[in-house]
Image 1 (cartoon, rainbow over the protein chains, first blue to last red):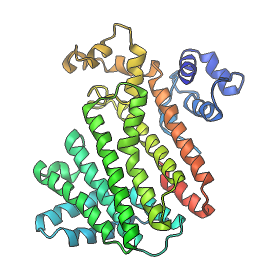
Image 2: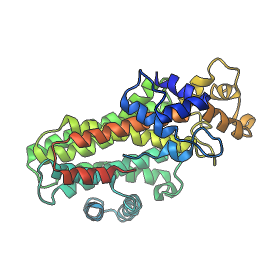
Image 3: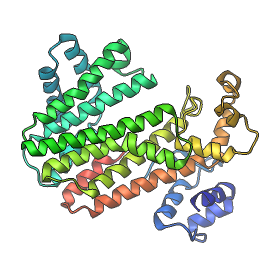
Image 4: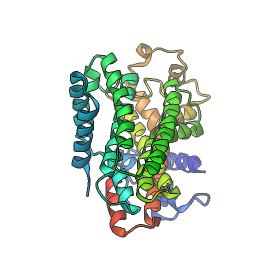
Length: 60
Length: 305
C-alpha cells in the first residue's frame, strides 16, 4: 500500500495537493505512514516532486 | 548534557595503559582523537542509559570508553574493507599496521570493560552482551561485503545486524550495568535508531553525485533496490549495468539519466518514508520509557541526527 501511495503521489500533482490538504487519504496506511508521506511530499522547488531537504530531514 | 570529553579522556588513558608499544600507542591515540572529534554517540548512550536505569558514579565512563573503542575498531576495519574513507588517519597508515591497531582496539574494549569498577557477575554479563552483539555485527558485515541483499526484507535484516546491533549493544550495556538486566524497550529504541541512521546514510550516499556512489559501485542499498525494482522488466541500461552486462566506462556519462530515474522511480521517497517510520518509532519508545522527563529530553537531544 505504501509503495502504491508513493507511485500515485509521484505521478499525480493533483493527488499531492489533495493529500497535503487532507482531501485525499490512504485508507490502508496508519497515522505514522501518512505523516511520513506528508513530510516527504511537501511542495518541492522548481517543479521537482521531491526536495532534498524533505528527503533527508525530519521534525518531531 | 554530554560526556564526550570524559569518554575521550578515559579512552586515551586506556590506550596509554593497554598499548605499551610506542608506535601502536601513538597511532592508536591519533585514531581515537580523530574518531572522538565527532560526538561520541555510542558512549553517550551507554552513560545515559546507565543513569536512566539507576546507575551512579563515574565507573560507567570506563564501559562507555570500551564501547567507543569497539566501535572505532569496527569502523577502521569497515573502512579498510571498503577503501572509502580517505580522510581517516588509518587510511593513511600502512594497511597491515592499521589492521593491527583495529585488532588492538577490539581487545582493548574487552579489557577496559573487564577492568571497570562493577561487580564481577555484572561485568561477566556485560562482556557476554558485548560479544554477542559483536558477533551479530560481524554476521551483518559479511552479508554486506558479499552484497548478498536482493530484497527489502534482506536489506532490513542486514542493517539490523550490521548497523543497529552496535547501538543495541551500547544502550543495553549501560542498562545492564545500571540496573542488572537488559530492557526490551532499550533494545527497540536502539534498533529503530540504527535503522533510521543507516537508511539516512544510504540516501545521502546515493544522492551524492560526486564520484562513485552505491549505485555505481553496484551496492544494493534500500534506494538502489527500489530503483532496480522500478526498472524491472524494462530494457534499461541501469539494470544491465547492475547485472554486469555494461561496464562503468560504458555508462559513466549517464549521470543525469540516473538522477532522473532515481527521482521518478519513487525510490528516494520510499527510503525516506521508511527512515522516518523508524525514527518516529524511536521517538515513541522514548516517550514511553519509564524514566524522568529530564532523561527523555537528553536522550531526544542526543539522537538528533
